[in-house]
Image (cartoon, helix red, strand yellow):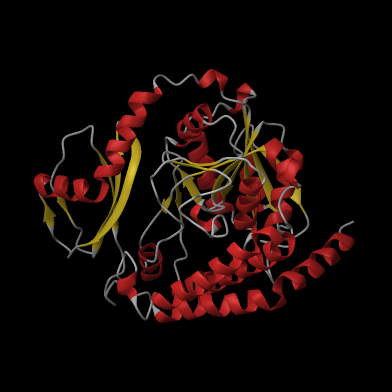
Length: 413
């Protein structure tokens, strides 16, 4: 865990196609986060606490990279050799939806990053949709006007899954991507999606690593040290069953997160879109991504986690905001499981086992950390916040949200 005086980590991009050079930790930093690239492709990420002013010589840097990222680098090299040339002309039509609410500054940054990755909006093969969810002013619409070809859609019903379903209704592509408005896409994001689809054209969904955009505050550092949104660079094709996991696919967090996900439009339409009682603000601001991943897999669609489908997310800067986020994670997780319990009786044994495991895992974060791979202790207030949210999630929060969205539908009918 960072010390009280530690306020930032330096984020460095290291491209292995170039000779390694000595690195010095800046005087105002207490550690470094490394994004490792091979042939310009992101292949690994790791953090290390280092005193300010520390110089890392090329030999020591190479040793650190080999220790933390050797397997990922080798796996990516093998994948590249086996894949062969990529024929992007076969890639289907893609719509990219950004659901936003009163955050024009981060939206503009996200749109700029999409423009920079080389998506040819004017070709008709790729569209960007901005779903302006219950805005209080016209700032978002004004931002969109500065990006030629971006489609602006206003969704009056407040709630993220209302906005996601509006994007699905507006979608004309074969694939529909969802990005949070506070992410920046990596320059290989579009190529990574094309590669993943070429290898898995039958997939119902694709996800990828979500790395930090900045590590400038204690809250952002703590969140990454707790695991962040998930940053595994292991390529995985998830199916209906995972033999080594008796509780699969209840722990839908292994698949990815809603900040960076892509779906087959046909699969989403077959499943009826997103559950609007989840991820719809108070009283239930979470669980929508877990639910759709779970339903995609149970419906028999492969879900592919692609290592090059990378985005950079601006984490909560304030510690209080992070604690509230952990509360909503516990809330959304248990509300989603309550729904799964009711609607999937055949899965109840695995749901029960996973819930018990989850509760034990939360307690292990502060009481017996040596039983976990990381071995580190989590801030006790973060664990308590997540557990408190879980209790509320179990105790009727899904039903309260269902009643709320029924009122919203009548109001906006």
